[in-house]
Amino acid sequence: MLGASFRATLMRCSQGSRHRVEKIIPQVTWGISPEHVIGVDGRIPDPQAIGDPAQRTAVETARLYGVEAGAPIAGTPVDWSSSGSSQ
Image (cartoon, rainbow, N blue to C red):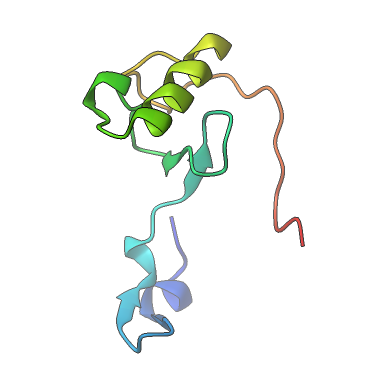
């Protein structure tokens, strides 16, 4: 849970819109690409629901590593982790 000072903080994005900090859900990657990211309260996507053939193939390939379509990410074992930026 975020502290009181964070709850009151507003973030400005480059377009000038405002977002309340408590509405930002932590993200986690689950697959073989940096684009395979969902909120910690999300579920692994079903490849059959993805229209783009390349994206569908990437999700199907990621499933070879043990993630199941529709499964919640919460409770999924972590093989390794990284924090921060790679730049």
